[in-house]
Image 1 (cartoon, rainbow, N blue to C red):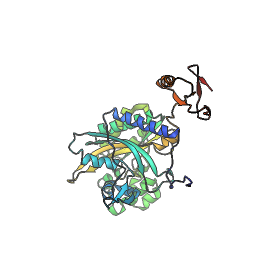
Image 2: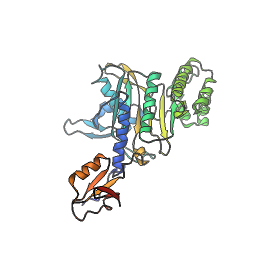
Image 3: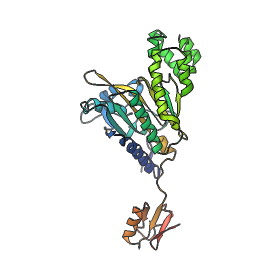
Image 4: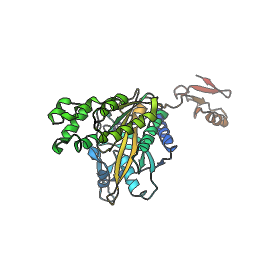
Length: 369
């Protein structure tokens, strides 16, 4: 007899969490679909070289690999669905009209867990707009991400914006930097370590650390640096996004945050919700590579649904009515049409309370237990 143990980082979702997880995924995808995003469902596993080639940065280290007994080639389980959307957009849907709007939802599996999220199997859902990374595209994606979170019951959302390739632009322009020092400067900025930044030869970049904070004050400080064209277009774009969102969302700006944004271009963002552990989602602009070497702009977001389930969002209705053995069959159908969950007795020993019911059908009417 087995003891029911599961591999580290994997778990069962039991009632009512499994029902809540399904409801959250459905709410997110219904919200995104209402904006014209067509759902795609890529496979859980792909050829390792194809998947690794599209997983930029360190994400390829998350791949759980195995040998396919049919093809005798190495396959990998996806740790992220976004890369698969890029493959679909540049192959099977390469000739479709742009902007191409796609959405997705499903499980991903990481090789190792993190301290913040000990689970290795997670549910990811999101949307990608392929063919543009304009301000209008960014506003559409950010707005949908916020609306999708609200549809699951998340309140008090915070949007944290970043400018992922800003340091590269400054290093190649007004604040020249030795390429050999660039990564050390980026790491120090990411850690907000002023001492390490100075030691790496990036003292000129210290004002960027002080510029992080609420969107209004952060933009004012960045404008005060006098960097002209390098910053102005980006800042104007962020102002337009903040103005469109208004007071519905708390907005902050960290111009040099790059952890997890290594492959994003001019804009990246994270989403946080009151009562949630860690990020609720993230996204930004990036490019996808076609087979002919052409790069195409895109922008999208991913929501991490497990923290929403753990927070107790979208629990199923507690209205469960017990149907005795002698009740007419049509009685249960009528109650279900009214939104009740019915639990029918299948033997005289069935106990309403033990089966989690809140009511019992008596004389055709649900009566509280």
